[in-house]
Length: 252
Image (tube, rainbow, N blue to C red; front, side, top):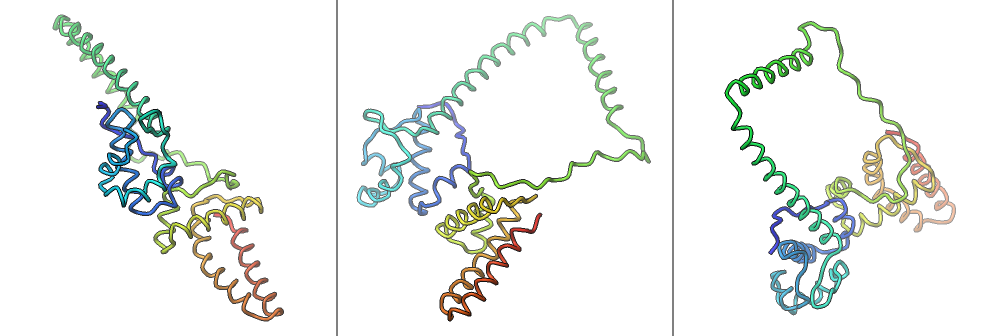
């Protein structure tokens, strides 16, 4: 069994890759990943055992596995996960480095304990003097007119071509009662629209929230336009297009 108690979870990457999973599928996937982490980054390729790990009966686990199996790779009679295996190896190497450093630190401490008392007193005095100088340099006199440095202003930038909603973006959408399917749909429209327009914003998170606020209104307008006569359709469509262009033109 692995000796790495902490499993790194990149939340934004995980949510971006699993937007289509149901709550039950999320639970089964995470239980299998955590158990795999504790068993040297691999598990037996045995559906009955995997079902037990997922706390499900084999019958209920079968359709769930059909959805989450794409995240795993078969290696002989075992299954692995590429990202988890990579992180597990990194954690193992860090653990070895810490163990080596700990042994070296113990040896250094033993040598230090053999020093004479006068040497220790001298080191303490030097440390106190150094600490005093640092404190004097950092402290500002009362009433000083020196102002703290200002943060540089934000600059407007274009949306990255590989943009996907972050966990914060997804949380904003959930707070507005968007479903996972609607979030994926709006994220694609948001990315395609702004990349095509070459929009630049100072705050793309604020731009995403504005998009969500307008998404349902635009959907209602489009439905109204489709149900109206030809002349009315052009008028409503023009209003929707103007609203979208106005939202894209505003910077944050």
